[in-house]
Length: 348
Image 1: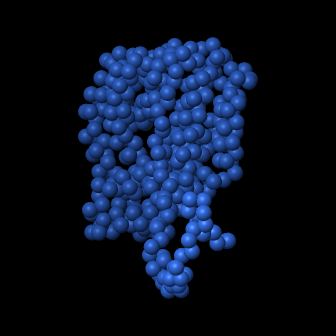
Image 2: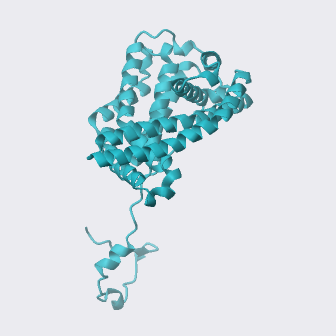
Image 3: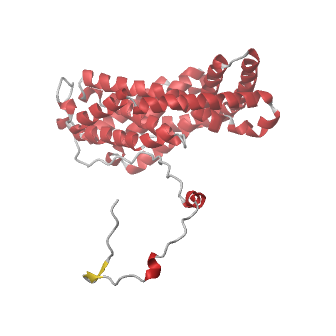
């Protein structure tokens, strides 16, 4: 690279430096140079930016704004997800994809079926590619954490964690390949073109978003969803474990819809309902933790390389599962209390 010319001062050639300035200097040690070099900055993850809709928005505007927000949330976290230093990067990509699928479902009458199904299938595929590593991230960083103090003295737990971390590394490599692969890139490009060109305007949608007021749609949609969830899961105490999982998913989808439409709804009612729904989702999350723990341990047992390892993983996994089963049981009274609050809370 060419040397930079001497600087000018006030438009004139600067005075020549003294000879000492050009004196030969001792080259720094390569080791010192390495020590002074700053470490590479790791990509950061970010949560979704709140969706803001104008009061007079129609549903054509809503589809454009909401789907673009889901896409942006997903793309902002790609680098962090691929890097894998912090598991939250990949988690946020999954949240963005789930929000996208929820939006496609909410707006299904305004989007031609063929378009909606194609986009939903691609989002579902990518989520499936990321699911294994997310389960392992949760298992290693969260589910096994309460028993971490017993690791040094328990060979079964040590074996579980050793196997889980190895599987976690392999699963992350698979997820990174999927995120950087041709299919994922093609999906992003197609979604980008669809959003920018408002592709839902072409084809046979059941309703025209340009003539559907967003505020009216939001109120009808959310009240219908709240009515359905209250009816379907009326007696929450009698629900089976799978049904409670379904309830948690339904609660999560309503929360996504509230996030999409919150600027068009009464602020106090949004705050009250969203607060109850979030607490209920968190309470039901203990059951999800138990499910993830049992599912992950089952997978680790299947990939173990010896009978002894399989027995140790099963035993260590049983200890982890027992802890979370107890936590899920202890959370039940709070779950029932929150459900009663939700049933009594006014709709929109």
